[in-house]
Image (cartoon, helix red, strand yellow):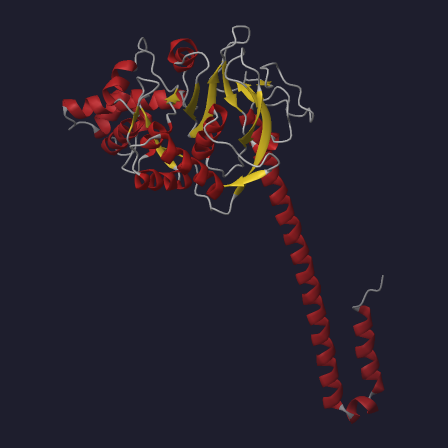
Length: 387
């Protein structure tokens, strides 16, 4: 299974951002507050809340509110669940919500953009059903590709990973070698394999290659399918990609068609012109930011213009790590310097104490033999350098 989100505390809060929004270009825009997320924020829960906000199902109040907590949002979603369906069991709705706080295990099927296998009994998929939110992915195998037959037999991500684990056991940890020297591997460790076991290893080689080539969890076949027939115009859905959930919108404006991800990165909370990110390729290198009119944006900061949210996030995290490392190094150097000063002071005190003891023990002898004391004191002075 592929897990999204990380554990959070109910005391965590997220900044709000005002944007203009309309699902249909024929309808006037309205001001809404969307939830931005930090790097450790629960992307699944935030995506669900933002879709409910954009649909008008829930509203964040008052108008001047600048941030929200998990508890506040959970209450809004729970109230919506309880009032949107008369036959819904309240206990069932409330028991599902904590799943969003701990993280969601989602298991996409490689042959359908809307299919996910249940990854447990915690009710992740049921939550999307109760809120009426379509959950989609673009990790789709091309029916014309050589790997489609294998992937269609294993169906989903969990089954594919289990196949890799089994094959790695059969090959004694040499599955990587299997794709380069399969016959040689058989001679070394596969002499006693059955035909079924050999087939499983061959399947695992194909699966491993597919997962490696599609590490972004999005294929061009899946992207084109979503953009053409997978979604209707004006659709708001939750997109699973890169072990992350985001809000995906298919534009209903014929003059500005395309797929757009809602930009919820907290670093853009003060950039009013950065609202959506056009989804144009599987790696995000060709993606561009647009404003609420879906026109290429010109951020006030300027530094992030034309760059994908993933790239900005990576750079921000790298800078933050480098700054932390530099601070740690500086603190360590200061600590080492202080330790050297303390050691020097201790040595000086020890030398002075030894000299005092020698002076006391010799007493009159030192007084009678001033020349010897003078030599000792002269040696001491030579060891001291005054700058």
